[in-house]
Image (cartoon, rainbow, N blue to C red):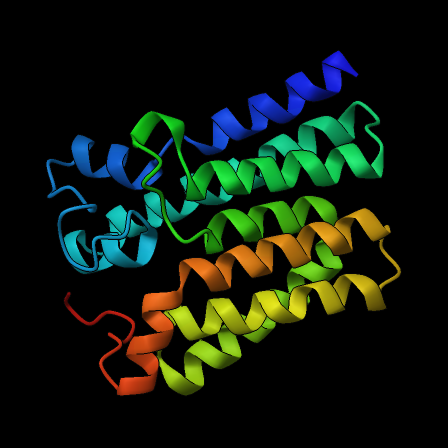
Amino acid sequence: MTIEVLLVLLAYLFGSVSSAVLVCRALRLPDPRASGSLNPGATNVLRIGGRPAAAMTLAGDFLKGALPVSLVLTFGASAPLTAAVGVAAFLGHLFPVFFGFRGGKGVATGFGVLLGWSWQAFIGTVGVWLLIAALFRYSSLAGMSSFVLAALWLWLLGEPPPYVIGMLIVAGATLWRHQSNIRNLLDGTEKKLGEKG
């Protein structure tokens, strides 16, 4: 039990490393928490720093979710522990202890976690994201829509119930973190992909 708690804590700490802040510091770009949409995530870094910076941020955020889950699975972790590690890494991104608990909205990290849980559900969820993004050009809408359906993908694929429950937690937290985006979508002020903040 002590080792399991330690693994969950380490996953949270790993998720707490803000890729957006570190990339922007390394490239001498404005702090993403004080520029654009004020969100330390890949979409905002795209607005303030361009595609290379956004790609690095996206990769870092994705790996924060994928690596902890993949690591514990390599050592034969149970489904409940694997689910807990994934959720912990995701929550670390949302509430990073190293950056005053001011984190991103979790889409890239959530995708990383989902890949570790089920590559089939990951592909289906990415497909939904791409479809919504192509049709409407809103990253926030694509992220929320795809994550709401991700738990359904896991359930239909017969994945372990802890993964389904974990994804419901991830989806709920994603919707909660996107409250301002939901308001902007409703009043027509949400920024589209690539649009300057």
